[in-house]
Image (cartoon, rainbow, N blue to C red; front, side, top):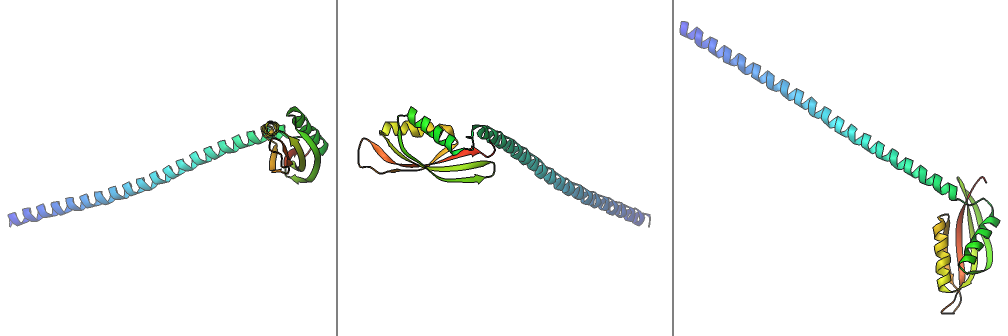
Length: 168
């Protein structure tokens, strides 16, 4: 009978140790699962923070670029736009035969002037004129159409779009 009690005691001990081991495994699994969830949360949070910082930097750069461009905008006067365009044309030796305003539209912080120019010049002079206009960054060439038949002389029309400050 003493041997039976020892065997029972031994089995109870083994069962108790197995229960403790199973409980330990369950607790470890729960802790690890919580750790993984928390780690995933912080990884997502870190990516969100990096994304917000990158977007904030892009917004700041865009605002700085906008302010630089705003400083380059022309005064809100079509006559200034005409004078300005004629000065560039004179430097490039381009003859503007007509300067016809097409529209003036207010768009947010600026005014968009659209004009039609009839030009006569050599192709080299036209290239100089177009290059000078493109350097301005506030004048865009919407279209350029050749009207004449001459091979070494450009005769045609150009539609320009210029941006001006809304308030002086």
